[in-house]
Amino acid sequence: DIVMTQTPLSLPVTPGEPASISCRSSQSLLETDNGYIYLDWYLQKPGQSPQLLISTLSHRASGVPDRISGSGSDTNFTLKISRVEAEDVGVYYCMQRIEFPFTFGPGTKVDIK
Amino acid sequence: QVQLVQSGAEVKKPGASMKVSCKASGYSLINYDINWLRQASGQGLEWMGWMNPENGKTAYAPKFQGRVTITRNTSVNTAYMELSSLGSEDTAVYYCARGRSGFGEADVWGKGTTVTVSS
Image (tube, chains in turn brown, red):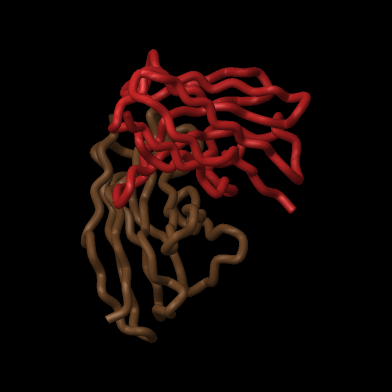
């Protein structure tokens, strides 16, 4: 199975300040046939189901503000929030879907300082 | 409004089986994949399996192989996940999530079904 790791596991943030979460995979998530990197980001707000933020490395889901962005390469990925807002608190997960079984990172808990 | 409506909470005895339903609303089940995932209390997300409802093809995580079965009934636009030989470690919230075709991202999630395994 592809192992996903995330750092940090806990991230206290200040509203208005930037924040960044890193994710790594044990194997490349690059599909050479089409050039896509099959890495998604999800946010689980307190008491809610997870919601899709970013798909295929950098494509924002519908309704996701442009202050949230995804980037990276074959095995190293970053989620950035340019200006944190109170609504951004929750646990962020990266997930690979280049092969079964899909696997998640352990999650990064973001809360307000 | 596109949504996935899951069945209600269950309490099961060790060794029993569970079956959770996931009804697609606002779209046709056969047009998107379905993923099943779970989350134990205070823990992370765990992917269990996938189905293409159009052709019935499935894939399961090795951890659950032999214990999990994903099915669907297209006449009622509903997918199901059955897990057998339950143990206390199966106590969790179980989610279904719609996946875009071609093993796509999970863009719509159900609200989750809490299953408690206890003697």
